Amino acid sequence: MKKEIIFVGFIILVFLFCAAVQAQEESSSQVVAQETTDAVVDMRAEIESDQKAIKAQKREIKVNAEAAHQEESQIKAQVKEAVKSGDKETAKQLRTQLKSTHQENVQEKKQDKAELKEEKKKLKKDTHKARVQKKSSSGRK
Image (cartoon, rainbow, N blue to C red; front, side, top):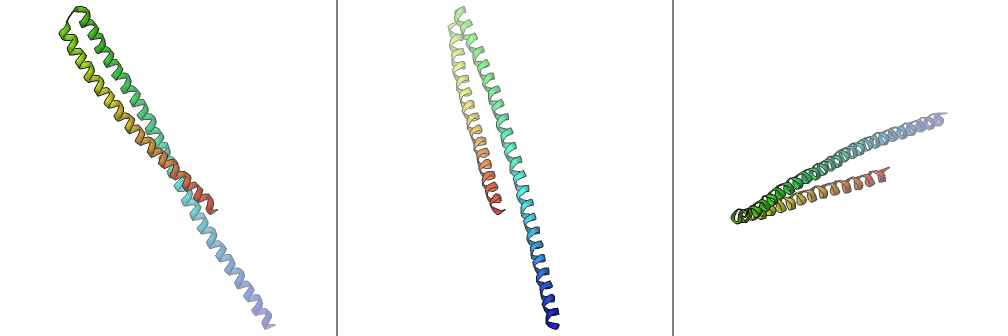
């Protein structure tokens, strides 16, 4: 009889121990799942932010290009008018101005494209990081 009571008590202790271990594992897996979810949300926000920055930068580049084209067109029109009126000196000065303006515009365009390239690199890096994080979190399950 004593052996049966000890045996039943031992089984109850083992059962309680197993239940405690399982509860601990569930709570730790919930913490990991919550951390993973938070990280994914953060990465999504960062990626969306990068995408918005790229779109804004593209719009800015387009506006700058249109303004530069307009400015060069105005100078070309002035050159034509000067040539038409026979003012060679003014036409020469305007051509020089057109050349320098064009060089400035080309330089600005190159700089804008370099900045856009950096933004795209940042987006690509963040996207890759999110994929790696997603793969590693799905491997934990």
